[in-house]
Image (cartoon, rainbow, N blue to C red; front, side):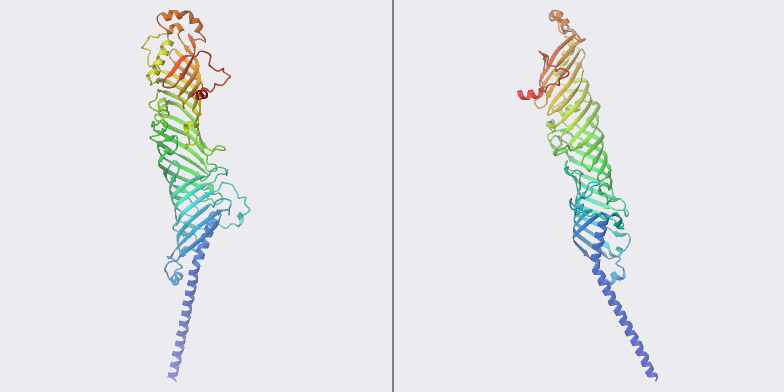
Length: 557
C-alpha cells in the first residue's frame, strides 16, 4: 500500500513539473513571438513618428521617398525585457519634402536629399522623445512671404481647432552640410534672397526654445566666407518668416575686385537680430586698399554701419553709416533697391561731409597725385549703378560743395591763380603774393560722365569768379563761362605805361560794386586750361537752364 501511495505522489509531482514546464515553454514562445512582432513594428512606428513630428512642427505635408531603419544586433527577447533601453536604432531617409500648408504652387519649404539620425528605442514612448543627433546632407530651405496664403485649389489648410498639440520631441543637435536658404519676396517679379550655407550646426537647450547655431556661409558676390554664431528659433510654423534669428558674424577676405569699378579686400565683423524676413545688422567694415579701378590709387576705407535687410523685397536700408576715407570722416544714409524694370539693384546714398580732406577724394577719383588740397564740405545725393556694371558711365551725383583753404598742386595752375590775385589787388608785380589760398563752392550734377555746374564761384584775395558750365570726364574737356570781378580797377591790373593808357577805361569796367568786371571763359582740359576773355555773353539767363556743353563737345570730337 505504501509503495502504491509513493508511486502516486511521484506521478502527481511529475505531472506538475510537466505542466509547469509546458506553461513556461508556452510563455517563452509567446514572449519570442511578441518580441518578434514588436521588432518588425519598430520601422513603421519610427517612420510614423518622424512624419507626425515633421508635419506638426513645420505645419507641412511630408513626403519621404524611402526610409530605412537599422536595428541593433540585440535579441528580441532582450529588447522586450529591457523595453529597448540602450538599443540604438539608426534611421536614414532620402528625398524628404516638406510642403508648407501643403502648397504645390511654390518650391517645398524644405527639400532634403538625405536625413539620418539615431534613436534609443527605449525613449520612443517617453515624453519628450529624445533624439541626440540629426544629420542632413543637401538641403534647400525656401521661406514663403509673410501673410501669403495659398490660392491653389490643391492646397488644403487644416482648421486650427483640429490641429494636434505640438509634439514633445527634443532634438539635441542637428548638423547640416551643403544647404541653401531662399527667402521669397512678396512681389514674384523680384529676385529672391539666396544664401549658400556649406556647414550649419544647431544645438538645442530644451523643447520649443531657440537653438544655438554655428554656421559657415560662402558669399557669392563679393566672394568670401562668413562665419556666424548665435541663436535660431523657436520655429514659427504659422509664419516661418517670423522665426527669430540673432547672432554675430565675421566676413573675411572678400574680394571687391569682382565688381567692374572698384577693388580691394574687405573684412567685416558685426552682429544682427530680427527674423528671417527682417534683419537689423550693425558692425564695422574695413578695406585697407580700397580703390577705383580707373584711377588705381589706394585709399583706406573704414565704416561703422547699421542696416535693415527686408527679406520680403530684398531691399537694404542704410541707417546712418559713419565712414572714414583716408583721413576724411563723413556720414551717409540710403538704400540698396531694385527699380522697376531693372535687372539689378542700385545704391542710393545721401552723403554729408562737414569737413573733409579734398586730396583724399581726388586721390581716389583721379590718376596720379591730387591736383589740389583743401578742406571740403559737401552734401551730395549719389545714385550708384549695380557694382558689377560700369560705375563711371552710370554714376549720378547731385548736390552742393564748398572748398576752403584750397591750393593747387600743379605749378602752372597755381601760378595762374597767384597772378589773378596780384592783379585783383592792383599789385601785378608783387611776387610776395604767392601760394594764395582759394575758395570754391557750387552746385553740380554728374550724369553720363558730364559734370554740370549750375553755379560755381571761385575766390582768391582780390578777385572772384562766378561761372556756369560743364566738365566732360571722358574727354577731359572744360567749358566754363561767367564773370570775373576784381577789387582793383582795370588800369591797376597792369604796370608801367599800360596802367596810364588804361586809366580812361576804368569807369567802363567798374560795375556791380567791383573795380573791374569782365566776362571770362575757361576752356581746354584740366592739365592745360585756357583762361581768357569771353567775347560775347555766354552766360545763360537766370530762367534758362545751362546748355549741355558737354554734349556739344562730344559731337565736335
